[in-house]
Image (cartoon, rainbow, N blue to C red; front, side, top):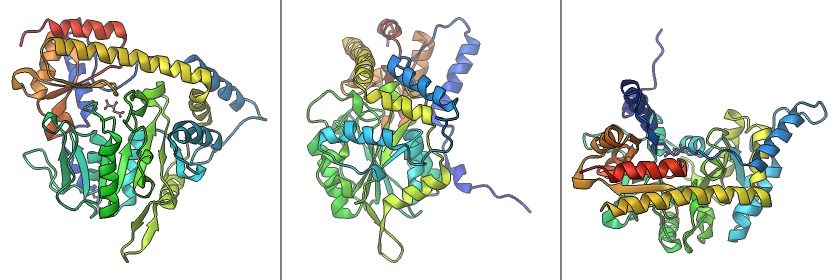
Length: 411
Ligand code: MLT
């Protein structure tokens, strides 16, 4: 008898990106215990949960301690009180109507975007923008959809859609047939956005080619530019061809608390082997009911508090705080002559390394010489080579200090 491993795991390249960065940073800190590191690598927030959120969280915990208000298992899909507020606040103002059964509360967009591919057959061709949030690729590699990785860093069965300064970070439609397209806008890692017209091109493509868009909108709250869609459902016809993922992590400081949601409209159908239509919503419902027991009651109450007038105000203050950091980062990098992108409708700033230094080498330079932790663009895919990502999620003081240190470097 032998237990055989899932061989597809051997196709995964290296560690998960942010685990690898943490490993390198820890090693550096061990070797340089006096180094005062400023972390602008993983997009983890620094502002605490707001007063209104904490109050709702506490109250719900207290309810759990009383026999008459205690709650055991909740609905796997989330409580209606949160789902209704999601629809009323996040979608209705955009002119988008949804049913409660189309919204699934979850423990975050990483889990949802990683898990969703389970619903599709192994021979579906997936397309990703490049550079890309590694979860989309890695979860498909684990599922056996990618084939092997080549020396060039591309998996043989994945279609890559380059997003670089050459195309202004607007992906071109694929030349080959693809089935499932992952789009993330505002984009992680480049911080760039698509206009409504640019996103419409993708919705139209999906409709014409029987493709499905998995749209990650985890950063929509950072959008301030008009004409940049907050939801893919602002585009006509998108409800037939798109799933949308949202997260409270960056919006409301829930990276550790864990809460997000995913929208699976009833209009989305895929095909079975016999070529018949299969509705996706009940499949995701079945998947979640089997493998997920819902987000805890206090966390859902905490998330709901974001939608109160006071909660909204507090959240907006935090978003403004981070976007002020983003402006500091953009301005200081530009002032030393670097080519800078993102950071306007997104907490991520993406810049070209000077002198074409490769990403990992420049990551080391920033770590060694400025004690600033960044994320090397190459870690997000081959087209990220030659770029670095910084996040605006540190404190204002540390952000200013980091920029001061970087400005003094000589390249
Ligand atoms: C990132 O830094 O790209 C994000 O923090 C990753 C995530 O949200 O999982």
